[in-house]
Length: 244
Image (tube, rainbow, N blue to C red):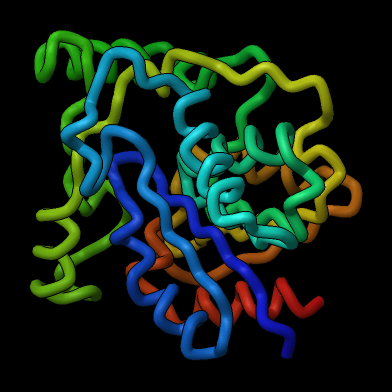
């Protein structure tokens, strides 16, 4: 099997840390794996700022690909990380080999992620952010929001996740991307839906992906945070996607 390059993009309130076990499996198979953390999150939480937008998150990943001089990248985005994947594909499709959307949101041009949520959910999220930080960032969600449980994952894993989760810059929900090309910009793409349990917020994105001509659609029977609940199975799926 040829040596591949994977860039794994985390979702909201997570950081590069969440890919620890998936990255270990991919590296053991002989591949190059990068797990960048987006501005204001994870080990970069000290950079939290009202200036962080969706474009900032795209810059984070595009700059890693540029600085590391990566080519033929398998770009994987989980949950909110799908936004950066779409933005990077818009900017530098020539650097990308395959896009993988892992139970992710897929942004539409000119529309914020917040605008796609039900009005009552929008109101609740804005109110929570205002109370928590004066509107700078949203509060840290419990790990159970992502389908993880102490019964299945165990106390050590749940404690690790809860230690590492961090607030999400609010403007990343309120700003949008401007796309001159169709989503994915012609790069081969796969959508992986997590089905046990289903994560309702990404349902419209999953349905959009399933309807795209030429896109692959797959399912994995685990929770939304598949990289934590089923890292070996997910790594095997990423290897299979890459080899097709």
